Image 1 (cartoon, rainbow over the protein chains, first blue to last red):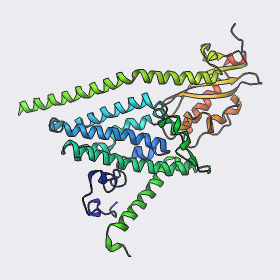
Image 2 (image 1 turned 120 degrees about the horizontal axis):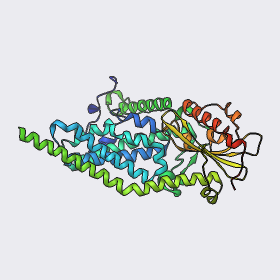
Image 3 (image 1 turned 180 degrees about the vertical axis):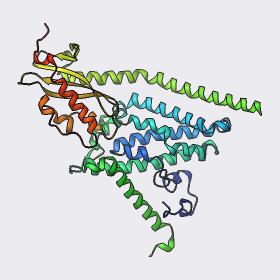
Image 4 (image 1 turned 90 degrees about the vertical axis):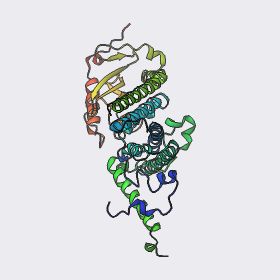
Amino acid sequence: MSARPDPSTTSVAPASLVGAGIGRRNPVWGQLLGLCPLLAVSSSVVNAVALALASAAVLVGANVSISALRRGIPEFARLPAFVLVVATFTTCAMLIMEAYAFELYLRIALFVQIIVTNCMILGRAEAFASRQPVWPSLQDAVGTACGFAIALVGLGMVREALGHGTLFAGMTLLFGPGAAAWEIDLGSRGLLIASLPPGAFIIAGLLLAAGNALLQRRAPPQNDPP
Amino acid sequence: MAESRLAQGLAFVALVVVCATLIAGTAALTRGRIEENRLRQFQRTLTELAGSARAAADVRWSADDVALLCDGRSLLRGRAAGYGGTIEWIAAADLTGPAPHLVRLRVTAHQETPGIADFLDRPDSGWLGALGGSSAAALATVDTVSGATITSRALLRSLSAALQRPALADPACPA
């Protein structure tokens, strides 16, 4: 960790709030937050997309309402209030998923439930939404959600391709029967470890290393031989 | 100071009420659909195993969770103590051979770890599919799923015990 450059020094211009959430301040690659659901659910693209959507809904809802209520939330009960708001949106997201994407819900319900404890969401509430107006908080939430989604779906694609030899399998669970044609069969039998938790750690580590290598090569010009 | 504390406390209570209302509202709006989903899922499973919707409607479970289908087959249901909780399953068994053997198996409810025990939800391929055609004796030799040993062993034991239920040994079709 100590070898990694401080994220605040790697970016020169203050990018937009949305861009920061995707890149420099990405919850996963920048801050290593939300790894539990990330590693557990990213075994296939469809699971990853579903969790990304649920997390995004909770993040946007929580950020916007905490920002709107920031003057009314008592200082001494700040964190309980944030957890309460996040838990409310999580419960609603879960109920909606159970009603409209039942089969997918059966597969990832547990990880939708623990969105409540996702540090990424509580972190944005505490660090940003509780101090900023609604509009910037919304942008911040969208950026963070996109960053999380990119990390989650990226890892899901790599693990599904390596672990099951397919891509976009089972998207019908989320997008209806029309999505059956999206499945790509890569023709390999699949490497079991990629779909198991150890594989998640290994692949996430490799992706993180690759991302950091890219950032480091790009950011400090003195390290960048022409 | 005391008054501002009171105001803050009231603000918190108000937040709690708003959050509770939001959840109750969503629950009320989705309840019907969720119930429908669960019921439809169960009926689909039963229809698949019984062979037709009519046969599924006629299913009557006996005390030891056996429902004879009168065509040489029988439905079985059972519970296995898995890793995260109870695994509920329904299976169709063929009684025409020397020993009852599984034809098809569906897991109807479980709380096993998502990602690791996903194979429980994919009945036609892989491990669950491979159990088809197994008698109680054959089930004893099936390998467990790597990473889900407790889950798969619990299921294997429960199935093996179910295939030895007395009602299957003497299948008398109820008139």
